[in-house]
Image (cartoon, rainbow, N blue to C red; front, side, top):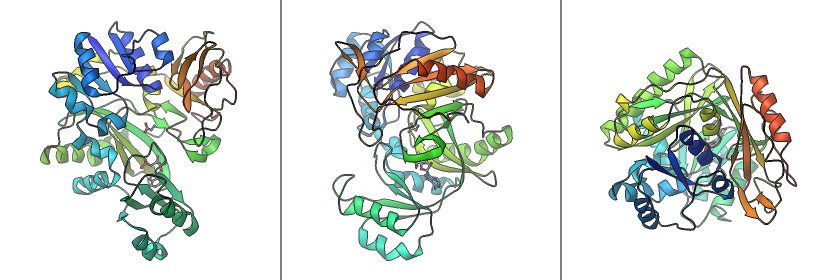
Amino acid sequence: MKILILGNGGREHAIAWKLNAFSHEVFIHPGNAGTIKEGFPSFGTLTSPKEIASVAKEKNIALIIIGPEQLLAEDYASTFRNLGFWVVGPAREAAKLETSKIFSKEFMVRAGVPTAHFTVYDNLDSFQRDLISFTYPTVLKLDGLAAGKGVTIAKNRQQAIAFAENVWVEQSFGPLPQRVLVEEFIAGVELSYLGFCDGNTFLPLSSSTDFKRVFDFDEGPNTGGMGAVSPSPHLTVELEAQITRTIVAPILNTLIQEKIEFRGILYIGIMIDNHKTPFVLEFNTRFGDPETQSLLMRLDSDLLPTLMATAKGELAKAPILKWREETSIYVVGATAGYPENPVLGSEITGLDSISPDTQVFLGGVAASSHGLVTAGGRVLGVGALGCTISEAREKAYRRLRQISWKGMHYRTDIGL
Ligand code: AMP
Ligand code: GLY
């Protein structure tokens, strides 16, 4: 069966790599110069879902997997479904679980899943009126999509005001109206719990933990994710049972009750607080990047039957996925200046060397007369498997050190 993956990052490369290992023919659109070089053809520069669908029909593609949230927000999923494709990715209404943080918090409240208390503001005056009552640190979130930049943890009143002014006065996140959530800060450790979901059944992938800040030991601004480890060192059997009972079951009940059709990946971002209680921080309605790369390093089964079962709404009948016992580590190499001002166009060297049990996934790269150059913040990443975290770390970092470009930086503490 022929499969089309939409997107251009390391996540899309990893999904294609895993499908290809089971001899499925995979296209990635638009992909990047690296994924094309790896043998995953692109459709070129097409952007409209109708044009993409028409080329997909010509090529006999049956299944479309939507990578980035932006395409879900633009309802590519419904366009493709209406044209007769099987699709992994929810329609716009259901994708609001990711694209609107307020919609998603209100859904969590109706479902009764544990989540941080919050208040919604739609203008600077009411925000300033309440400022005196905030306790710090406090979490401030823009309602809409902001490429990972819409969340700030304010340590004091000045930082809270600065965020609010950014939103409503400078309008750095786009024109008004804008809404902001002010949320109780929960201290703890984070877990990314991803599953296939068809609206009735949730089939978890293995667990992972993402390293979101740009610098070692969680310093610096948030990014899309600088690395991941799978399985998550924070997940125990007891905790997973609790997540199933207090989070997954009520989510499914509410999806069913409210007739929200969801066929895609539901990514539940969880904070496990210091009393070991899991709280939902956010939903994403797609594969996470870089969690997917670390997860798929450990998957031993063919992904296609589960993806098809998701698209068809038949997950209850899907085969059990087999995961390797080993740990995997995924470390992202970023461009100079990432995340604020990524420097593009630097020549990348060292991609040709080989080391066992590692895999390079290409994201922000483009072709030039010298070979591949940097073309995005998160350029590429290295995944590695090991019997222990330290063995996986050693393999991943050894491979990553062979690769370089001007100003390349990466975290050295992934998995620690
Ligand atoms: P979100 O996009 O909502 O997941 O937020 C991005 C990151 O901000 C999360 O991965 C957490 O590290 C942090 N964060 C979000 N909400 C909270 C919260 N209520 N308490 C503590 N940290 C949070
Ligand atoms: N790694 C977090 C995300 O995919 O949004």
